[in-house]
Image 1 (tube, rainbow, N blue to C red):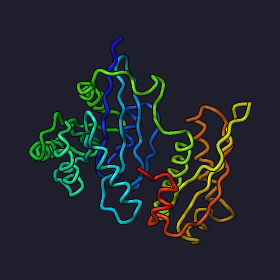
Image 2: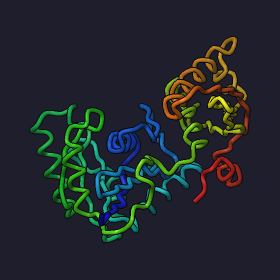
Image 3: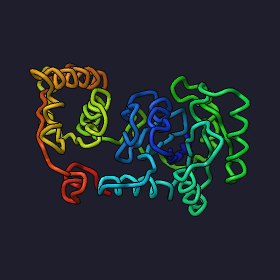
Length: 295
């Protein structure tokens, strides 16, 4: 059987729904999501194999104005992911004006000579007339191969988007095994799950100043997995908030994370977490690289 592959970058501003779309396309949660911007920090590949075609979706950090070394890294990942792919999906919200983040991404798309599809997400939040205004604004801004309204949460319009993606598949061997859904190592997935729960449970800037390191990942003969994780934060006061009164907040975060880890791994997980302080780690080239944010 002749096989085809399509490398597809999913780009957009922070919190526009890129990771939600990636998870829906792949059919499994491989990218963390939250209601806070700049959730995704690394380039994450989601893999969908459908009959003779394998789609590799590259979920990228949100394109934003960087204020730290970590931010510089994230923006560079988003920018560089638009080159050397078969198609770029630009995900936008249903707003009839083009913001500076979208303008920057449009310039990058035009400069890459890569075909692009516009996915207008969150269509469940606007009336049809407003949606037509959004389509009009973006159709004048760039020569999109297609403009497809979608709702990444419910999957509305996602089949049409996938059918459009299939047009750009190139004849080649599959890049990943057919049953694989992500290129992320299991340790990294576990760390990201814990970080997601920090984003959901903590307010304001505290979760953006956290990083998670998996120090132990081992499987017993019975199949049970033992995970030791260290949560790093930037201030001693943040450490107290993460741990909470009598350890209540850390217990809540750990319980939520363990449940998702067990779903992903398909087996029982014993998770132990610690909290340590690394002041201003987001502005340290060494620590940013040490926590896995490297090109």
